[in-house]
View (cartoon, rainbow, N blue to C red):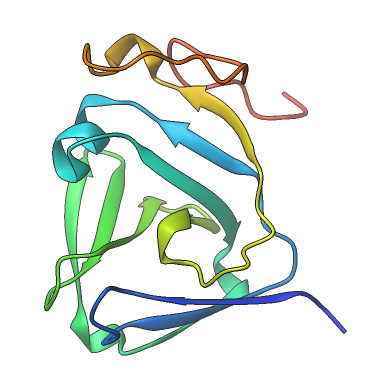
Length: 136
């Protein structure tokens, strides 16, 4: 039987199921993530075909950058998904996944844009921008 994770927004209007393995959690400190969440984002990633969303009519999206959109619940405002335009994967906000998640953090990215009010001292690898994809 394959691994299944479930999750939802704060109000429960949008829920999802993730099937199969997911990527480790990446912490993103870019200015866009920081401004939308008031801190940094913790997200995993999964192939888009392995995600089933219920309540998708309650999702709104915002094109955060020229190459990516963020999807959030338009009722409670919970940030749920981030997707590079045209990509076959979607990032899922780790805090929306029901526990136990079984997830582990892997790295910090866009640390050059992190807020000046916190330090990165957990021993994880730190990248000034985005790390190179595996196999490149």
